[in-house]
Image (cartoon, rainbow, N blue to C red; front, side, top):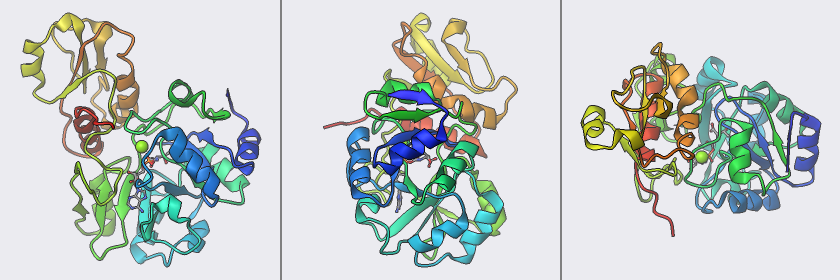
Length: 322
Ligand code: TXA
Ligand code: MG
């Protein structure tokens, strides 16, 4: 495995059916040829992802989407013009060109147009779209740097394309346009309020579930850090733990009595975008310290704060693995 910034090298591995890690503005993706069954199987194998959990199809621009969907509804055009390329994923009825393996047998396909310049250049240089789940093992925290990818997948892929730290730091918002009622399936890099303001209507939200969710990957337990995490009731929990052996994740305030080296204050100036960008690195950062529990505060339930709370709530659930 090597890490580098050579887009042509990444493209040549992809042409040969191999996988590479690709930077996007949200998180790093584990990318492969979306139209080739072998590449798709390899993604599921490397990620240890169950085959019932569909992948997102990545494209450079709206015009590239036409072959893969039945039609592009007006809401797609409105949202695309407002937010794309960017951290928004659209679920639409799929065409016959999209492999069943990619959509896990669903009649819909998820489309995303990443705005990271390296992802854009890579996609534009290829004659096929890319399937790319987040480049972590299934159920773990998504990577926001090339080094994070190397930690979990380094031995399994030939090349990591380094595009620096991800600017948004949370996965894309997923919006389902395949049903009569527009529905948010995953909170993410585009705030719910901005989507509603752009569409001029309220959108529905799907609650996360631990079984049979609408989007199979949206299981409650996800994003597990390697140390137990308690979310919310921050001050109360702080009184109950051994503060010398506690890590904290807070928005802008310090946690009394916890050594500063064990505190991750995500945005001292109180900016939810900055906090979002730092969240996943913070979740990973405790593993080499003598810490037995992580306490995370609740963030304001507005804008990107909703998605931050969603990820922390799920990180707090122990992952049941077979
Ligand atoms: O920001 C992102 O979206 C990142 C970057 C790499 O683009 N990708 C990402 O992929 O987060 P992944 O595979 O980790 O999460 C994709 C989610 C899964 O929960 C999956 O179940 C859902 O998208 N999904 C994919 N296709 C779907 C479909 N047809 N209907 C409903 N949900 C779908
Ligand atoms: Mg993921």
